[in-house]
Image (cartoon, rainbow, N blue to C red; front, side, top):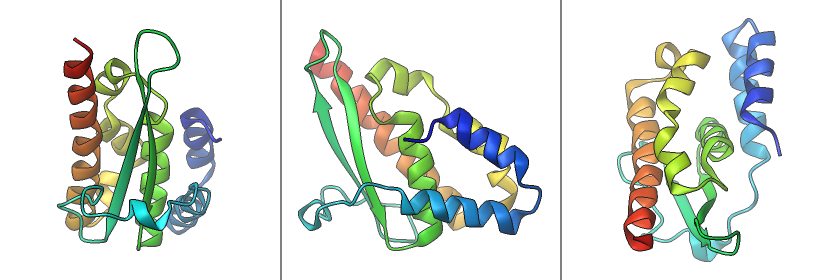
Length: 143
């Protein structure tokens, strides 16, 4: 699995946005396949121009604090890549770690604010908010 630091380093090596987009699409191709049953209305992320699904599993086996694991999918190649970056940041993290990680700041650092359409930016925010909402729910359930 690629780390966020590896993605950051690879982005730094790519000067042209065409190359960065190709890299993001390649990241999307590394997503674990999402079973067809997970492409459900409950997993659909509203607010995205493309079809986007995020499926969460809560792992409580690692001790006291649960960890949220995700599968994600989209019908758009670039969005699959954005999901891959999001899951690199968030999947496998505790709710507290998720809530303390500002994914939008990471995407801004990569330069996406200037290079995503307003619709894609809104969709990205919807995906981040879905994951943060899951983290808040997991925290509430644990207390």
